[in-house]
Image 1: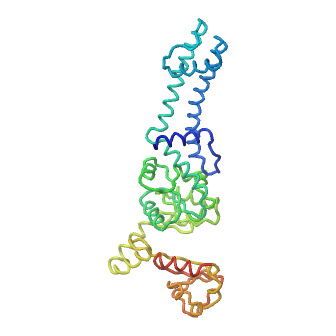
Image 2: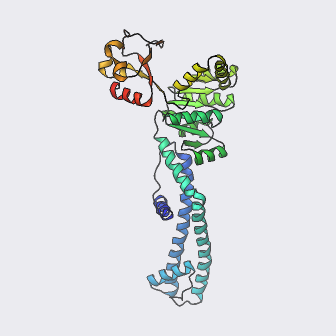
Image 3: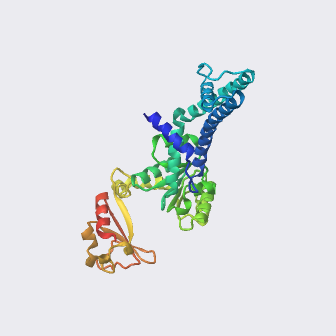
Length: 365
């Protein structure tokens, strides 16, 4: 049943391949290549039937339907008796038509079989649909590379239900991503602008660069900042000398994985309970704690331009306000109840998913 469905779907794509937006071109070209092969196969068969029909009609004077039927049985090599008696010229024409039909039929069968073998058409069809989905994403995250650190990054993004697109050039890693994950991905070199554009860099909200070579990270950061000046860029670095260069190229944050790991292990020596607490609230552990920084302008009017105590925001929403960010960018931790929530301020709250869901229902306009 699935095979029949794939054949019907194949006919739809062969004769009505849809137009696509820019940013889906790599998978689109792959699908176009498949469709062109199928069209060629069907075209050869139709051409053979048409030539045979016209030939039998002109050479032997057969009626059109008899000529058509003769072409069909010749193409299929069934071996029925001749519908139209053939003279010498007709037999020569028939011999050439048989040789041509053998080649056309063999090409058609091999093309269609190779497309469906090992799920090839299904894979290209799914990846094309994924490319269309990527072209429609907005304010998403792009992750460059799929090494050790990027693997954990993608797991956390998926756990937090953040839309992201993964860019990887290694075919083996691409095969792993295709088989064992549900990530949106693009196979290509992230240092190329066209690959970044295919991932939707112009509409993305954040970029995470995790390639092992700082030179490549620097190049990607520079290109991304030019393509999207408002993008939030987080880049990996392997040396302190490159940190300044990567920040100068446009990165908002530069991360040293080894430095973080060393700090984490050193803190575990004398403050293990504190580390476990930070692991919990950072959503790295099995628990799910969600942090949100929300502009006061996004709150309902009943909570704006009032003190925290007057608005009763924390009481109504049952989540603590652990910090506020003032207009100058300065954070104030544990703001007192008399702090006024003006429109140019952000508040930082946290809680479990159910608490944050209630917060959005009660407080967000």
